[in-house]
Image 1 (cartoon, helix red, strand yellow):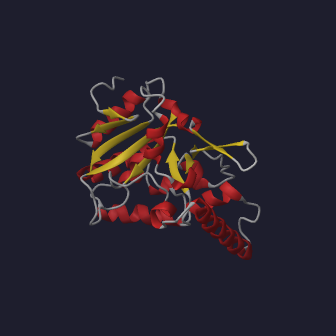
Image 2 (cartoon, one colour; image 1 turned 180 degrees about the vertical axis):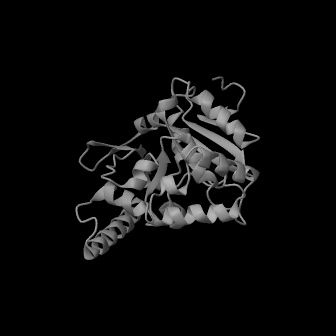
Image 3 (cartoon, rainbow, N blue to C red; image 1 turned 60 degrees about the vertical axis):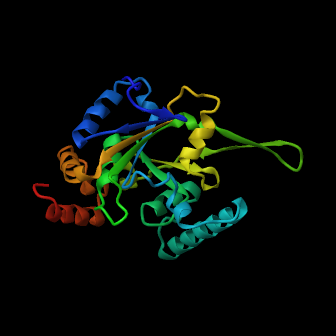
Length: 258
């Protein structure tokens, strides 16, 4: 696939499409690209929203220590509540975060998927709101970004290395939502926007494409969701539970010939 026809700046390739059919065609071309399997995918309703976790969009903290304290307490409360209900007793850390994320907990993670069509579904699943932009967006993120390290000298004189962006391993353990959505997550150091981390990364690797930003017109929503439903990608298959069934039925009412 040739990228010379599209603007690339600071490691970010931006592709603006005319239709959902163009997106389907583009994915076909991406799949034969040698680096295709090195990317993970995410859909967002608006193309101007930063690549931040829901927690970091919602809460502004003064420093790294305050953020860590709030998140530690937040997860501990969730764990305690789960224990009181007799659920998820053996879950800790990232695994508990991932369960909470798929049930409405404000997490420090961003959801990604191995499938660009699943990302497309999440870009278009929700109806437009007052803040809707002209384009919805599907992002592709190169997993090589994990090589970006922050090196800091500790009080003992040793060098402390931390990844700016982690891809924390999460076991699905029968979690059908995680399995069906082909889910994985990123966790950004101090909640920094992924795009900012990409710009840091490419300073030493200016030729690499780390983030692909695919913009698809909002007006293509019905066409997108009908096309994906034909491919077996819908609320029922991605959320195999009562919630998914209800949302699927709502779309049947909303979209003609869905």
